[in-house]
Amino acid sequence: MSRFSFLFIYLFIFCVSLQSQSENEKIIVIGDSLVGKYLEGESIREVIGNVKLTQGNVFVTCNKAIQYLARNEAELIGNVIATQDSLTLKTEKGFYFGNLRKTKSTSGIILDDTQVVLSADSGEYFFDEARAFFQSNVQLIDASTTMIADELTYFKNLDKSIAVGNVNINDTDNIISADTLTHLRTAKYSIADGNVSIKNLKDNLTIFGEHLEDDGQLKYTLINDKPLLMQVDSTFNTEAVDQNRISIDTMLIKSQVMESFRSETNMFKATDSVMILRGAFASVNDLTTYYRDEEKIITDKISEDASRPVLWYDNSQLMGDSITIYLEDGQIKNLVVNNNSFMLSQNKLFDKRFDQTSSDGINLYFNEDRLERAEFTGKVQSIYFMFDDDVPNGAVKSTAHSAVIVFKDNEIDQVRLFGSPTSEYYPEVKVEGLERTFTLPKFVLKENRPLKKDFLMNRQEGNE
Image (cartoon, rainbow, N blue to C red; front, side, top):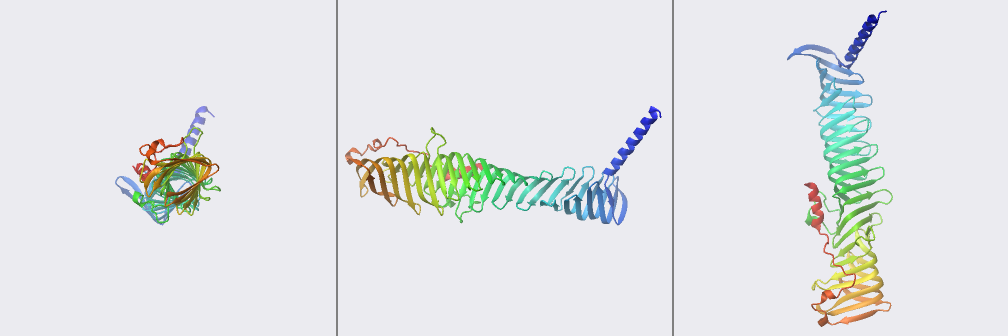
């Protein structure tokens, strides 16, 4: 055989192969009846009754189809069901684009791939890419979660969803809301951005922020952009964040980074520039760890050279290397200041007079959030201003190994010193006008006590 003949046969076979391949890519539509038409310069076929459309492994049934031959497309009408392997799409009216191997509907569409059920007012599905793009009233449901959004892109083979606009995803532990959210269903991993909130229904605890990463398998959540925690009583509505509606039982925490560990420890951690507010209590520190099951909060400094955590209660200020708060049914029962401890209380009538006590450690005991008793241990030094019926009457400097102060209506009622106590009284004539000279070496008056507006501004900035 000549080389020319061989080349001719090869080209013939190649062209037949291309023609066969092209024919296989054409959609095939059959039904009970078929009517050919020529409309606006285009050949069409109307197929009515028990319509079946096929293209490769894509199979579609409907009541009626209008096939556009040149475009390799078809309009599908009535009880439309498209299948590809284990995937099923249902709608009342849609289109099939053969060249793109894509179907589209604006008449309500449901996707079911046996793993998730995805529905929306409109949507399209790319069969070769195994990708869906749904819009308007989007809902995705699987065995453990429900997600709603304005728009959602679903990658079937990756088991991945990207949701945009008013996103809300619920599982057994949490409700996550955001402007955008990427969710890996099998890995149970979510990344959310913009107006983010994650609410733990069990603890009635909500964390807000601008960026969130949640690992459902590890039960770990990270928020590192404008995080704010609210743990509220049952009467508080987090959807109406209003300064006047924050009750005394609401705890607020703000920081640069927040982490939630929901496994065995059920622990929450706030790091860097931490602020806490709960009723008459407030704190500023570097690191706060909240053990929810134990109802215990620990504030620490992150290094030896870092500032000591500060806690305010009513008109009192406490400082130490670490401060531990013990709660009971949401109320503060006990507060422990460890190492390098210092407490001062500003008189409500004479704001230049500060009762002060420094020691190695402090234990405060509360009843219904009211301070009843303070115990000071180790190297106790104190300065207390004296009054007779609210009339100033000098000051007393004391030292002891330990001390107990009893409070009444949040004011000092009794001071008891133990272990070689010493005291020195200064009459009022030596005190008046010289109050700030009566300070202990550890005296530091902090002016950065957090207010409600400091936390609410965090939410308002995130919503802008």
